[in-house]
Image 1 (spheres, rainbow, N blue to C red):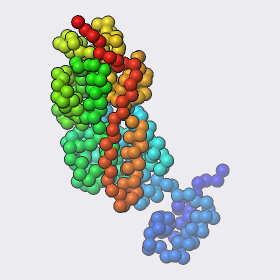
Image 2: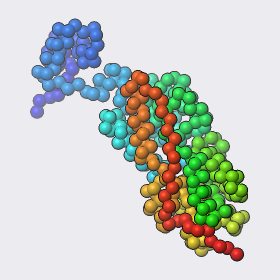
Image 3: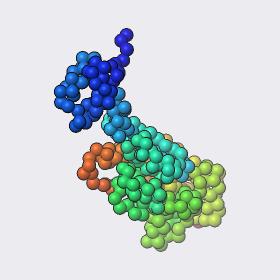
Length: 341
């Protein structure tokens, strides 16, 4: 089998330097037309195929994308998996390499990804209302797109779910079924106090709905750990025995809530209703299948990836800010409020 033809072979056969071959391949204007033509003829004769990644690096591009998902904020779930699939689908078709970064990064590490041409752009996830990553990249003019949005979204592109409306939609569904004692189990207070967007907006939407409809707000914080959610649910039921419905903000909370209900012989939905702000796939796998305010996670991944590629390829790109409306899918975990003595 013949050995692979290298750029050195092309330079030798054309009687020019390796630098000249490289500059001809990258369409630099300082290569004489006759020299460029001779190099192209040699390339065709030898069957030389330039390494695509090497060409990109010479041009100052890596054709690589990073998705920054600091998994310690809210944990990894079916939602994130669906998002990654959607984004990967777009990046693969556009011939971009797709890198997942799960560990939190420092300012130096984030800037270094761009400065050393490791990536051309990034998708930021787990966005906070005041997010230093957004401020840093915006200040330096590096291309990025967000899943989520900040308090100040000037000059940035994002795709997000309207979490305020999601909480209100879940409450409205339960209120129409006759429930007036509706409890929300949200992500732990420290995460929210640090400005984690989804957790903050879910609580805001819930509290506004309760105020509008003169309902007593019953909100509690929990981590994503099953045993912690179980404890918090049990404490709520002890303190508020009139609770007839729960809203779970995160898929990991569902198991803890249902375990606490089973411990008290409370059945879904005869005794207590449960609505999750979770993905359809997760909701369908639960027993009973769960009524859910759905995240279109796969589509969000598609849209974010398309926006980032457009930003990288179109010098006239105008930032897009997409806030998706939630969708309620009624399944078997919610029903009419029970009549209690």
